[in-house]
Amino acid sequence: MFFVSDTRKLICLTIILKFMPKATKRLSLRKKEGKRILRLISKSLGIEAEEIFGRKPRIEVVSVNGRNVYFINGIPMLVISEDTVFPTLVFSKYVNSLPKVVVDMGAVPHICNGADVMAPGIVEISGEFEKNDLVAVVDERNRRVIAIAQALACSEKLKNLKKGKAFKNLHHVGDDIWDLIKEASQH
Image (cartoon, rainbow, N blue to C red; front, side):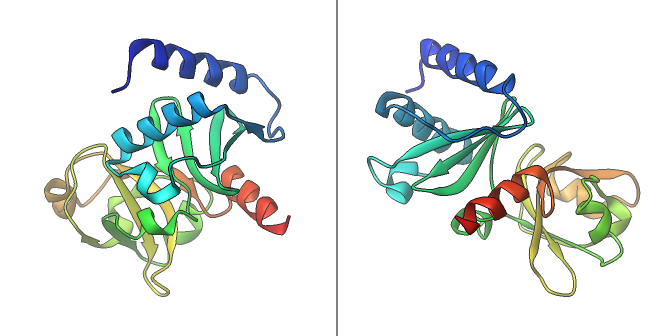
């Protein structure tokens, strides 16, 4: 169960990290804070975090432009930005289970520059989801995940949408989180 005092402590940690420079060095979380984060992950993503990461994973946090990236056992797996929890592109075990949105190759450079996913660029939507659910954005040619996005409506509505924004881009290839992932993989 997630208690109000736990929420306040996480908010305080987020505020402290938010005002640090662009990317700081990793801060290790105490066991108690780590357990809180695991509960938050389980609740937000609907997964059993302890089963995936173990009962006592090493959790570190890095703040990048106001978003907290959580390294679990040395791998950047999750991001908490304001009130949204989402996986990084390297958390393939979770990302591969998300509903997929296939976009045409003309939309790829725009999405990889941070643009939201627009309805005209969508080729296919597979899987069911509700408004605000997470989806994996996949390019049409290679079928590789290029972004994690948040649905702006349910899947039934978006399948019939012809114009306008369909998904909010949360994390994509080439963003500051992606740069941190590349940097971490080189060490």
